Length: 144
Image (cartoon, rainbow, N blue to C red; front, side):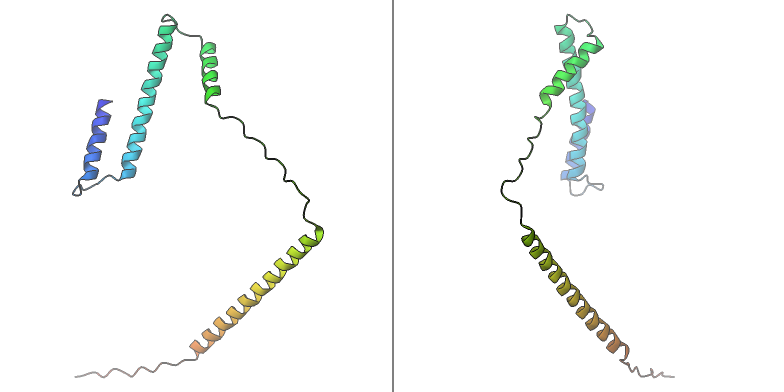
């Protein structure tokens, strides 16, 4: 474990050194630190197991007891269930309002299609006029 901390320290120093060739990024450091955290948590869990053994007079717990203990731990960590949303109060939109919204949407679609057609026509006419342009390039004179 001490070697991993030493390696992390070296990575930090390389990160601060602007002349380091493969300079580790802050994301590299964060990833390495996360791996160290996992190792630390693993060691902490082993110490917790030792404390449980000591509390049980150094006798192994039955696998069932261990599962029950884990379930209690999980239940404590579990978030409360989400509260269901209440239905919206008030009258539902009338059919006339819905049909008005629908007709407005259709009109907007028609305007959009007309604008797209006009843009397409403008682009096509610009392309046709570009095709009819002739460019005159005089022949290069060569010296002997």
